[in-house]
Length: 427
Ligand code: GDP
Ligand code: IMO
Ligand code: MG
Image (cartoon, helix red, strand yellow):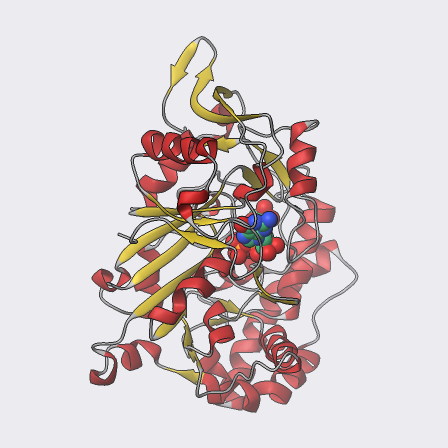
């Protein structure tokens, strides 16, 4: 098998963590390439539940894991997450985790700024996780943010930090009583730098070294393709590129290393936060999906908005990411529905359209056009063999494959690690 990149092909929380955990045994290295601790990737093993935000899911199987330079790292959260794993007997050391010394440092005032903007300033909220992701990426692009390697030299760190804090205090003074104390943040950073630095290295150099020339890589995406800052439902997106193409940028490897691309989709659609969602069902079946699917955000606990599967949206995701095949998760959630809908076209006024427009203004006018299928009304959650799937479940899968023109290679029928059915070889 070639290298593999796994991405969520909707608005996040598709079950990426579970599928990475399922597949990573076949790979040598698991690599996170974007986002930060806004992600929440769940892995359930019997009665144990792990929710990973900044750490790659491959750690649960003790794979060598690497965090790339496009990731924004809150060093305090990072160390906490390592401690939480330790309590569950997963030991993370520099032997199984390397972080790019080029990765950006997310600081406590980033989340403060994020929350002030969301709660006090903006009339139209994005519904961020409030974890400071946007402000930290802004600092990176503006070339004033801190990088992990800035922790190496305290004098240099002081200069960089002073410049950064001076900039933000201009804004904070005008909107809040709270301004950032340089001494406080410096003290915090000095207290943890020796715990962070052993993990840090030039990961591009490492991954391009002879030792890694035959190693198999699995790139783990965070967020979903519709939250990509360039291709998603802007401005209701996250601040990073969630598409696989960004994995090569982040890790500093040849683009062909991205390998095959596996998109993860739920058998329906969910979204946390604000923004357009053409197939959203605000009551009735939407609430039923939320209840059966236990649809609450893994990071913020917010209820997820729910609706039917949107094949038009998914086709866009397939295009922007170059998806070769799909894993379809949470089919068990559809077990009790007598009728199941799939959006196959959009209506825009009197026109029918077959693609998802970029403009949010246009997207807000879209009405979904549905195919209606008979539900299977049978429990699928204990099925282990694809041949034992109900006929109508097979029909649902076939209909999606036909609409999307990509194979569905994996089915997930429950949260537990073993609730999975392999249908086809991943291509
Ligand atoms: P990620 O961010 O893409 O890794 O997904 P999350 O972990 O945020 O959300 C997926 C949720 O669905 C988690 O609570 C998983 O335990 C759960 N889950 C994953 N696959 C399945 C499935 O096939 N069926 C059910 N019922 N739950 C699932
Ligand atoms: P995983 O990896 C679902 C959403 C937020 C908000 C928007 C911007 O678990 O799939 P941000 O804090 O990133 O600035 O918020 O993006 N969002 C997610 N939604 N799953 C996630 O991650 C998300 N990460 C961010 O809800 O709408
Ligand atoms: Mg999640």
